[in-house]
Amino acid sequence: MQKLRLNSGKVLNERVHKVGILAMGSFLENHGAVLPIDTDIKIASYIALKASILTGAKFLGVVIPSTEFSYVKHGIHNKPEDVVNYLKFIINWGKKIGIEEFIIVNCHGGNVIINDYIKDLEKELKVKIWKIDFFFTHAATEEVSIGYVIGIVEGSIEEHNKFNKYPEVGMVGLEEARKMNKDIDEEAKKVEKNGVIIDENLGKKLLDKAIEKVVNKIKSLV
Image: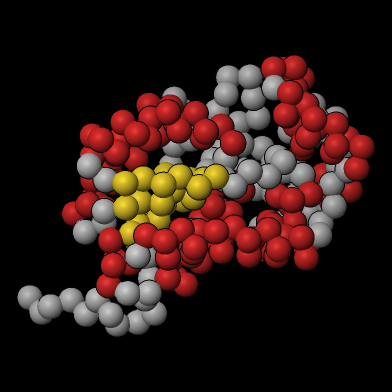
């Protein structure tokens, strides 16, 4: 076999080939009238793939299962152990192509539950795992604006603002979640007061900032 040309193409340096990037989100949760049910994973994938393109780090794909707090009822999720087992599968295959450090780009709040498992995974699999979380108020202005920029928004924003019909928007109508989580309640109050708008400049700014954060992390590793 020919020796691999590790410096060909747009790469920071040879070391970048030892860094892998994963996208983590949710595939099955409601996001109002204008965003699809897999909004989280689409945004996470956009950020992760863009960072991969800018640096040469390996984009390893997406983590399919996701988890959630029991009191947040706006979709279909999995047990934390399911997420961890899927991570083991991807990481083990990543190791076979030379990946030593893994960056997880997560855009789903419920996935903070797996943070407690990261250290154990590192010890078990003998790799380094960095999890970078980007959280935006659920289906509210920030997330809708980002979705607009990446091209996944369609429909009426006026319809989207009907909280009685779409209780998941800002989690305004998710009474149990608001009761159990002070932060969710505070965010819901803001959405109730201000509504949801599409702000393209805000969406671009948030995306650029997120991509820059991941790129800087990769640079720090190589």
